[in-house]
Image 1 (cartoon, rainbow, N blue to C red):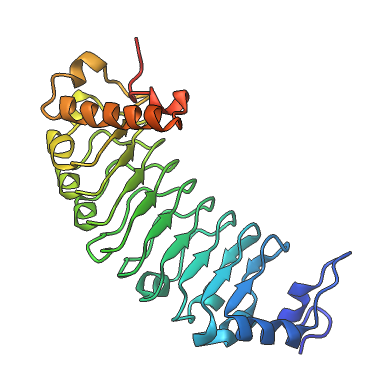
Image 2: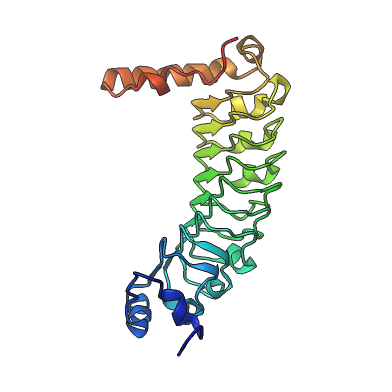
Length: 271
């Protein structure tokens, strides 16, 4: 239903915008498994109709709106892709942390100060950049996680449990308040890229366990940190990581794919 200012249907209508027939839209969501309402001027709570899709929903994309609550999406147990980027969310339903099929959670550009506990065994990509996070949940159950972006938050440390995410390949924790990398990251045999630009990481905060243990690490970016190259060169494992970086550069030169800006950057400020 929904007459004047009534039910959720009013959310679909706005001046100069021809809302598709209500039932049509919901039945299309059910048929395709894709609930997409990107940049539709939604404000406040996510439309209640979303809840009715239930098990059928595989993708939910409500990015680019002004939502402050997404409770209507809390009961979509089969989601594989959850995109809520660029809204006004201060919290996420705990149910999101227990989605067993979820592969991607993109919630960057909100006002989140915390995340629900994560028990998402299939999650491959987690993007929570540009929020107000002061801490991260435990990552023990995120065995499939490959990409983690927590940049532009107010994190003072990374959880030791990240060391359990053995599939991790890229971590971007730039623009936070970090002073060190946990030794446990040294368990990450597939980690290739670790970005820590614009934090408070000094030489003492660069873990030899990470440099030595992360045998595929070729990019450790430390621009905008209180650390000098000569200090780093004295840390056990730095030379080995540099050798990996140079081997990668050589490979790119040989293949003719080198982008000088990236390839020749050793990740440290000159001063």
